[in-house]
Amino acid sequence: MIKAENLYFSYTGAAPYILGGVNLELKDGEYVSVVGDNGSGKSTLIRLILKLLKPTSGRIETTAGRIGYVPQRSDAAHSGFPITVREMLDSYRHLLKLKNRDVIDDSLRQVGLSDYSGALMGTLSGGQSQKVMIARALMGDPELLVLDEPSTGVDVHSQKEIYSIIKKLNKEKGMTIVSVEHNLVAAISNSTLIYHLDVGHGHICTPAQFAAEFTGIGLDGREE
Ligand code: ADP
Ligand code: MG
Figure 1: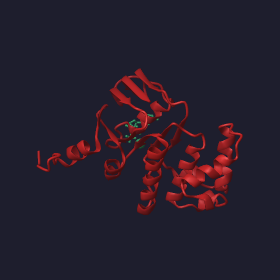
Figure 2 (figure 1 turned 90 degrees about the vertical axis):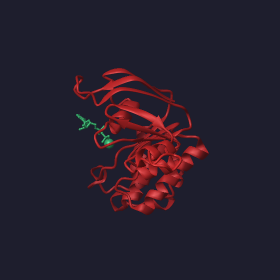
Figure 3 (figure 1 turned 90 degrees about the horizontal axis):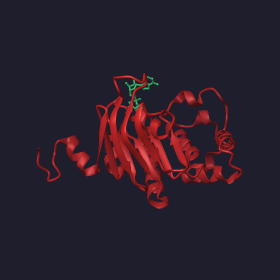
Figure 4 (figure 1 turned 45 degrees about the vertical axis):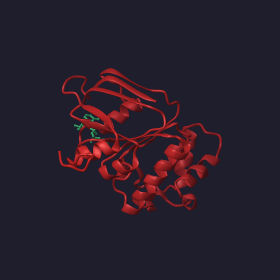
């Protein structure tokens, strides 16, 4: 689904590189959490996956024809404009040139917000507006769903709901998920694989391997 080979990236086109030789191969149907320190290049990596940025050198490719994107939450995105959830999604439907109006109700149903189509965007809680952004990403029926810190700025109850929505899309629809995670517990408990980005490189591991690495306690329970 996604393949990166010797991927280098810097915003200036010269050293220092934010990504310095990333090699990564992801199969269809995985739910991958991308973890790493602040500023390690997680958002940059997903902008490269989305082709919003071009590699400085090396390659990154995806075979997914349809990709949904839930950007890092920013309250600025909804400030001021008194538009309803339906109006916001309908303008996105036009952008995607989708003829079928049912995609709005279908996507709101998938995130459990069927009753909120008439609500003003500005009146939604952090969790609700994040779910609307997930609904928006689902309108194009994506094969690959990319999320950037889906639970940041969201209350604990809504965090649980958001992860259960993502897991359901992965398990029941076979949707491939790439999610940047600030929340390591969420990464360990929800995803099928973890990509740990560290000083320009990264490595893929299972949630159990990552948990062992990050707590310093081995899989056999003994300290290393
Ligand atoms: P993360 O998502 O892991 O916190 P980012 O990918 O956002 O990290 O940022 C990686 C590095 O690139 C940081 O040092 C950040 O300051 C820098 N950076 C991010 N966006 C830009 C940009 N548009 N122009 C220049 N530098 C940027
Ligand atoms: Mg980021």
